[in-house]
Image (cartoon, rainbow, N blue to C red):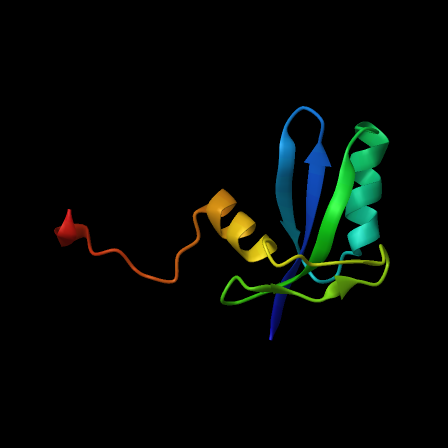
Length: 90
């Protein structure tokens, strides 16, 4: 089941960063809005992210797909974890 869409943008100043957004919004709309305000930023990958935070697929509107490293990149950027930490373990 598809949960949401994502793009990974690359800024000359900030480096790469992910943006997650709802299914009803086109990948190209998000990228165009960002590039209108910040012309030097490029989209380096785009696709879908499922409930397990696994990236897959490609954007039809951008004609660019997900990369093998996107899962790790997004999980690291948002500190997602499938494991629930026990407060008593600390």
